[in-house]
Length: 319
Image (cartoon, rainbow, N blue to C red; front, side):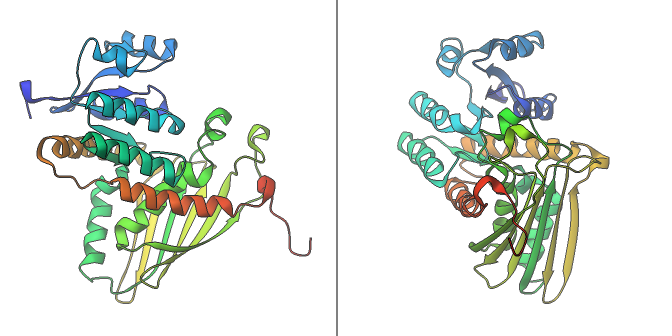
């Protein structure tokens, strides 16, 4: 796609994740963010200073221009309303994960999109990391044999702001959905069982009782194996993500998000994901996540969150 074939996105939500997408697509030759929508005046002023037209709502945007698709990066609680606005306008949607705070919200977003006949993709960017794609092919090809155990870890450099944490659904909905999706996508198996253990310390008093700083989930997989999801908000070196797969024939371990590389892996994957979304809109093909994936992942996250103890406190044995 070049010249007049450029795929023009409108970014809806100019917060932290929105700025990641802006950076990832800043120099892309075929898929570009040409418009920004955000209800916060300061956010609009910031992107306008960078040369992008900014609007307070999707409806305001549509009075000036009609993009090829919406890239929704607004807070999770707004995903459903924004998908509905896109559906009303007939605009395809690439929606940041998790596409809702619970399975019902994700299912409803998918139903609305399907009813309007618009393409709808959920942005799980790890599906576009070449290392992970090769691992998936090895597993599917039988090179690792039967999958016995998968260990997936995501540890962030520091916790996000309390306002974000208290409105994002908690650590399993905010962070863990990446691991749940990754495990399902890599193995081709469903999550059958979930058992959770949170860590005790919570460093920010503003989120105590509403979120935890670390939690682990042991999963039972439909193929008979197990998986461990390890999540944490304190990794001094910076954001880190790893996955390790043990099979009956072989084993592989990847650190695909390495603090030494900064956000380079994520930015490259976000760009590939945007290309894939353009392909979905124009040709009906996609390697990305769909509604069923979003619902299944949020169901696992819901089951994990339900097992956090009241107040998210850890009680020693004997108490």
